[in-house]
Length: 115
Length: 112
Image 1 (cartoon, rainbow over the protein chains, first blue to last red):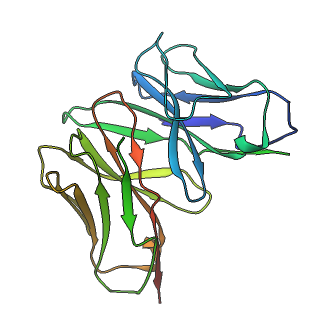
Image 2: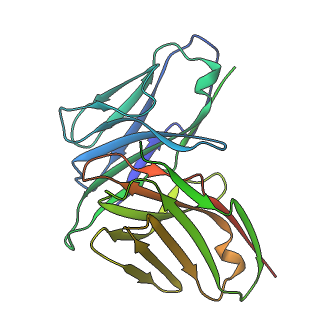
């Protein structure tokens, strides 16, 4: 049981390049999320997917697109990277557990630098 | 718009001391509050989750309390150890399958 996995761990892009960040979870969770973490700003939600086949914008969606490929996988795409997208990106998933709790579980993060 | 504040931003204590980390939020209409730990360069590890109907949760040396009406939560760490050194984040959620709003964290250092 790996939990939430993210690839790649590190990435350097030039301005204007595109890339896709991959996220997968093996906990059979319905909901998945993408956050970015910047110094002094805390974590901010980019997009989320309440269930397979649905996606919704979060607080900072501009410059990003997402795809909920299936129940396990939720990808984040940067079509034309900008230096302002230099950040650490976290994927998370959540579901009701047997105790009736609704808790989010996070992946290890992807450190992206755009030059 | 929900805002979450954590004070202090940084804290240094000697080993063995009991300490309290504070979290406040502006909108009391929350579903739950979650405390996380983040080690440098790592992801977030969930420590405790409190549902809005609960007053506190305990796990080992950690105790989290929630006063929803006043918009406050505290994380109490007993008998602190150097291994507790990390950044502690609190986050609130207005409902299920919805976003967490995070505070900016308290960076804790426990010295020998």
